[in-house]
Length: 333
Image (cartoon, rainbow, N blue to C red; front, side):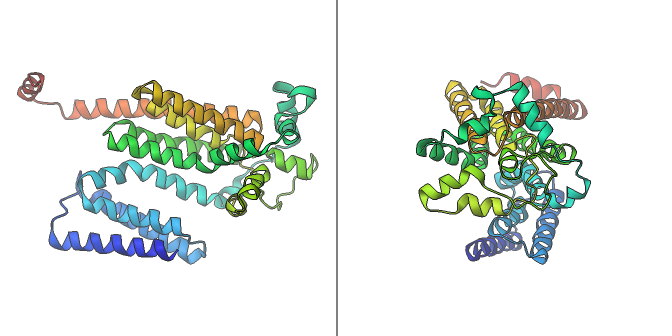
């Protein structure tokens, strides 16, 4: 926390110095977004601090959002592209606000559907089947995938930004769209994960059940850490399993790096497959949750691609390039 505050203070001092010296240059499209980001980040930081839930990642994310747009140029461009991810982070971190809208929790019916559609050998579900066939190697691989699924999105976004690809902006909005669809699914179709069914059975739903890291605790035990235990202890909604956003986000990456060549495709698909496996192997998700997550990612990416294409076409119609400029550009090598 101390390091995050020092970072935030340093960024704030840098912004103040740039504004005073006048060397920052106006952010792209004026300072409207810069002011909006400043108010949004500052407001979120204040409210989170007042709620007593402030963590280092809140300080860092809000500080970057407040400062980068004022730096202009590529910093402002990055902040605009990453802003949708910040919105999702706020929504996800405050799921408890939506729990009052949650419908009936699905437990036995979803488990029965899983057994009917995708049974494992012997008539068990795949999460049950894997719990009797664990290994240290699979625990480490699955734990690695489960711990880094958000990191992969961040690395892909940075790579696309460095390459000046339009897919950077598209990935940000797709991330928000998939995340919002996922949270909507948690409200409309709350579902008990496999570990809950194993612990509490198919009877009356225990809404007060404590969150669990389930099979990911084996990863913690192997490495002597409490990474997953502490992470899932903060889970605001244990019945947010359908769809699996763990399964969805690697699909977003694969979609948005697809045009970069076969190496990008192979790596992104291999990582996605490992996360899908981990979601079931670690007893966090049913196979149907994973399938739903993949479908959400594809739908979100497709919708955002269409929306951005229409937005670009509309902007081109509203602000056509002069004929002379078009001729000059066509003549450029």
